[in-house]
Image 1 (tube, helix red, strand yellow):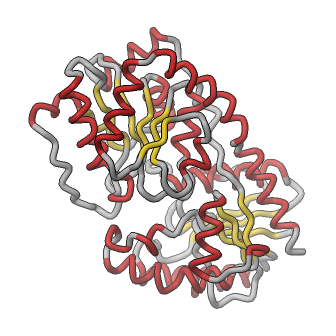
Image 2 (cartoon, rainbow, N blue to C red):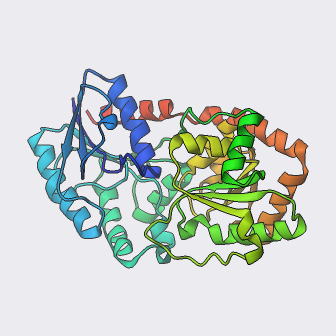
Image 3 (tube, rainbow, N blue to C red):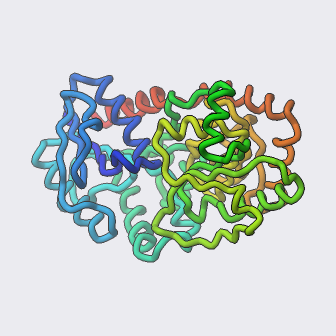
Length: 371
């Protein structure tokens, strides 16, 4: 079989959600199925570390697709031609974008439909493209994969897709996320939080990630517990958003922005935290939740969309629009060691449900079901 994969988010120095999903799934597909040929379609010069085996043929297609007009060109002209040229049997797109012009069977992973529910959070040109084309992608796909039961229901209800055409495959997390010895945690804290214990947020600094309310809740927490944990925020701005976070001058020394971190750095910073605070008001899955479970830290998470499905009983669920409720959860984590230990133990157990090995095996099953 000749399998084409959209690998445009495999970026060596800036791996985010789509990139890690593409990495974890495609690497396993290649390594577990050496008898098949894989064609990785990049939109710019690629890093050789992403060529996971001798059965991979890397192909760079013009133009670099990072703008709505260029999306159309890349998928409907360049990808269409490549699928024909390389006689591809099936095209797998881990970011949900498809070619509407090809007859080649296609599988799309649609992670979530946040742009349908909160369009104001997205720049106009991207919003217009997504709202116009994603319904078409959903109907064009021979099979849709998605990452939570919440997202499956959302795709069904929003685009009128039959449930039989959508398969839920939960994400995993890197096996590099493990607990750290206390001595290592102290070293990390000295580097990233001036030696203080801290709450952590991990994710792009996008409006739906709810950073502004997280900081407001943290401000309330610090008013009540001035010597309490600091806050470390890991991630970069998406779409160059300029959201005013309204950070009180008294908190500037207690909130630490790291920007993008390498995987090695991220695993250490996560495992050295005292709690993950992850309260988006819209999320398709939330990989940082599983990373926290594996790292042995408790979780405070939002109670909307997919997050309760992923967290289960391994975290405190809060209304992401209620800053007092978020602050109260922070207080509980800070004061109650028994609660923290209980959540950590539940997290270790629940993390066993989420595996990239499981996910890749299920993706492979869906590819084979097309033939």
